[in-house]
Image 1 (cartoon, rainbow, N blue to C red):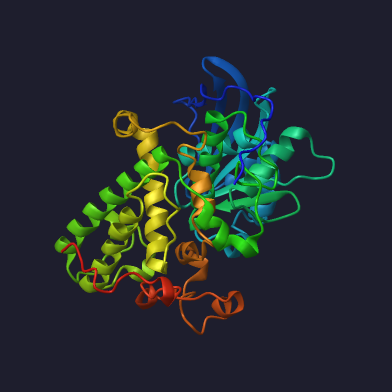
Image 2: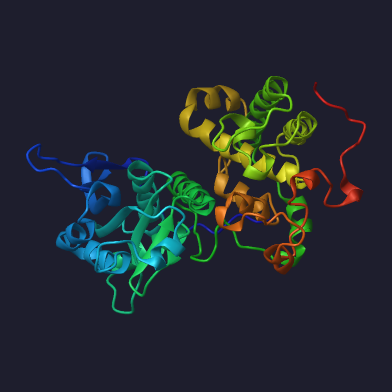
Length: 411
């Protein structure tokens, strides 16, 4: 795989951040609508702004009127989200899992050279993370032919973050679903790659900092790819830490079912796994050991998950590696001090795109697709999905490349 051609150096994004500003007068109850101003800052210098309206239906009997008075996209949203009597429309209740709380984002202003789609999408993702929880419908505009540049940036950010079209004017991100969370992590990775490697050129339809190869030859090409030494080291650390935690939970949990929303390694798995027994959990814990072993030698071929369980484990490993590089810089520095730097160090977006043939297993987090693992599911049959049922997670994709059945368990 050849290195990308050098493109003109982009802006320095390493000091870019956001500041959320909200004022509330004690003599003026907000009655369900809060206005927030988001400042986009390059160090201490303001380079852009964004307006956010945080709207809670249960907090005001007249939310539709307040949103209308607020103007802008809020007024457009009020007409689409509420009936003339102030109730939520049937279309809204069909479109989102938990209708009632809204975050409306509009009035973006950002100066060049920061009026970049990667930057704007990251700003929107971070704003949503700060102002919404898992029970919000985030409302953003669509892009019309006559839309201005900033509206188009907002509209594309919505699409990047897994929004669904709602009306001609509106898109909605349902934060109850798994897809927006995964999309936000991907947007964050792309921003970090852009900030750390400003000379990389990304085609607007390309998610990796080098040209896509033919999908039909995916497996052969993947075998020729290598991870950088530092990336391999952090992935291995993440795999080893998750393995240790998983085996601790195997001992503590036994056959005990887990409730939805449980913490820990097994609590982060899709809901269909929460009632699996201790033996199933031992097999899942072993997937982290197997992948950690694949990552023992820096610069070796990229590890290829050999079953659905390993695919899920690798998603968790990449997510933990991302967290390690973000929140534990001293540990990373000590870990990689003797390893050579590389232009692709810590490119977690590329890991997510290059280590998997597909991301079908992540569909199991989508509440709208409950029952997808059922062999008789119409969606599963239409998409040709395999091995999604929890009992099939450890069946090898290809018996020729199956793990050694006699390799045993850590415990």
